[in-house]
Structure formats: C-alpha cells, structure tokens
Length: 481
Image: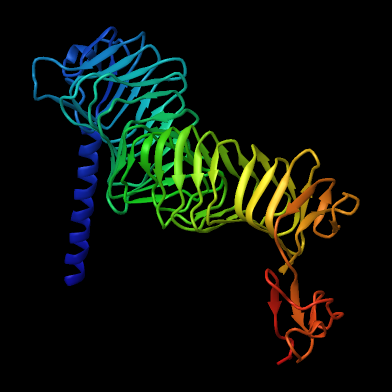
C-alpha cells in the first residue's frame, strides 16, 4: 500500500512538471516586426506569424517572448506616453536595415544579436530605465551598438563584437556571472564596474577604459589582449600575466595597479606611480610620451626596457633585464644596479649613463651607443661585452668574473687596448677604466706586506709582484690562516 502511494505521488509530480513545461512553452510567443516599425508596446508593430505580416495573435513582446526585428526594415522604439513602461523579452535579434531604439528600460534574459552581416543597429537614446542584458550580446559584422545617451547598462553574459561598439560614459556594470569581451573588433568603454568577488571579466580583445575601471571583481587579460587604461584603476583584482598581453596606462598622473604584468606600457603624460607589489614584468617595460616613473622596488623584466620619450628613475634597487635596453628618453640610474641577465642583448638608443652595470647570463651584450658607467662594470663568466670604436665607453671600475681589474683601457685582442682580453670582450672598441686595482688571493700564511703571501691569478697561483694596496680587492681563504 505504501509503495502504491509513493508511485502515485511520483506520477502526480511528473504530471505537474510536464504541465508547467507545456504551459511555459505555450506562453512563449515569437514576434516579428512589421515595416516600418513603431513603439515596442504597440500591437501594430508586431506580427506573430512572419515579418511584415499583419497577423498578431498576441499584443506585444513581454518577458519570455522571442523577438525578431527585420524584414524589409523596421525601427522599433521603446518609448511612448507611458513613462513607467520597460520592455522585456527572452531574446532579441536585430537584422540588417533595422534598428532597436532603447529610449526606456529593457530586460533581455537571453541573447541579444545586432546585425546580420551588413548593418543592424541597437541604439540607447535615453538614461530613463535600467538596461539589463542577461545573456550574451553579439554584434555581428557591420552591426552597430550605439549609446547616444550616457545611460547605465548591466551585462551578465558578456559581449562578442565583430562590428562597432560605441559606449557612452554611463557605468557599464558586469555582474552576477563571469563573462568575456571577445570578437575581432575593439571595445572602448569609458566606465567599467565589475561587481562581485567571484565575477571575472575576461578581455580577449583590445579594450580602452578612459575614465574608470572599478569594482569588487576581477579583470583578467587573455592571451594577446590589450588593455588601455586612461583614468583610474581601483578594481579589486587584476590578472595580466597571460602570454602576449599588454596593459597600457595612457592617461596622466596614474597609479599602476599592484600586480604582475606580461607587458607593461606607461604612456600619455604625468607621473605613473609604481607600487611595491609589482616586481615581475615577464615581457617588456615601455615608457613613452611625457610620462615618468620611479622604481620603488627591484624589478625583474623578462623582455626589453624601452624608453621612448618618457623618463625612468631606477632608485637604489637592482633591476634584472632579460631583453634589450633601448633608451631614447631619460634614464636616471643613481644608486641602482642594472643587470642584463639574458642571452644576446643590446644597449641602444641614445647615450646612456648607468650607475652599476652587470653583464650576466650568457652570450654577447652589444654596446651600440656610447655608454658611461659611473661606478662599476661587472662582466660575469659566459658574458661578453661587444664594443665598437664608433662609440666611447667609460667606467669607474671593472670586474671580470668577480675579480677587480686595474685601470686603463680594456678591449678585445687586437683592439689596441692596454689590457686586451678576448674572453670578456669582442669587437674593436675600447672602454676606459678610471680607477681600479687587482684582486689578491692569499696563497700563504705570512706577512701582509710580503708579495709572496699573495697571488693576483687565484688561489695557488704565482706570487704577486707587490702586496695589496688602496683600491685593491682582497680574498683570504683556501685554507690559509
């Protein structure tokens, strides 16, 4: 008896579900526009049979209905004398030669499609009412999304743009769901608000945000994406480490978001304030325009450093650079160490002055411009400084493989330098070392002043010709007391 009751209960539940589904299906109506169009909430604007057909078995589209605007061309307007009216539908598709003029609020719970390949327009012409686009917005080739009024707009399904997206300055709120800005055409949205700690807005395109990027969510850069920030960036989270992506701060007097970057560009004008949490730039650092930046921590830069009109103050930090150093702007290196730790690297642009310059890693480091090292040039084992006699090079001191060297000119074998060395130098140029000395290694437990206590070639090397003096570097070890 109990089993029969349970079975009967399940059957009733199933019947209710089927009934609700059937009622929902019946309740959903498909509407087609009738040329030349008209108000959304007028039955004469619509057909429930086909484009331009006068048959209308309903009234006008409401929530849950499917809407097609097209045929021989229609302009459907959400407006009219009822100031409280807001349009709603399950989906809307705007064909070529047709327009949806949003003059009040609208809620589209599914997909919004603009254009069929040659035209099609959705235009927002009023700030009255809330505009909700719950599903994906698709702008096809030659389609136009045009905001002539600076209205707030809410997106929950992202935007795919193959046409033109022209936004006003109203806040564009991406909330509730993680979503993407994609397609082959660029975006320019002055104000973006990503709302919700779990909400991720992924940019896979070129996105320009000229006024404000804010919210409690996250903006994530996809591979190869470009993000141009012209105003403030107070968004809680940003991920900008995908391969080939670039974040470009294009405004004036901006604070750089404190995250790691693939490629970071500081352009426009004014001071770009770096923060201590930004230590890794796996690609290129580019500073251009009349912008300026001052380091607040040591940077590890995997690619090139390019100064093309801007200025960079390195501060009292060590900056590791894996690519080329290209200076056509202004560089202040006081107190800093620039470590070129990649493979084949080039110093180019205009004449540059470094404080400490280290050549590490491997391969040839080509000095393509005249270079001054105000403190120390250090060349590590495996690295080679390629010098040209077309340029002038000077350094206060020189260290080769950790060993301090004497003053005078240094260069490759055959360069005519007073100190020729084919291990650490190539090319036909010379570098003049203003001060220096020798590195002394202890080889005996004896008096400091005795030359036989020391060698300048290494532990166990031949005795030196004299004892260490002012400016020399001393290493005591190798078992000697």
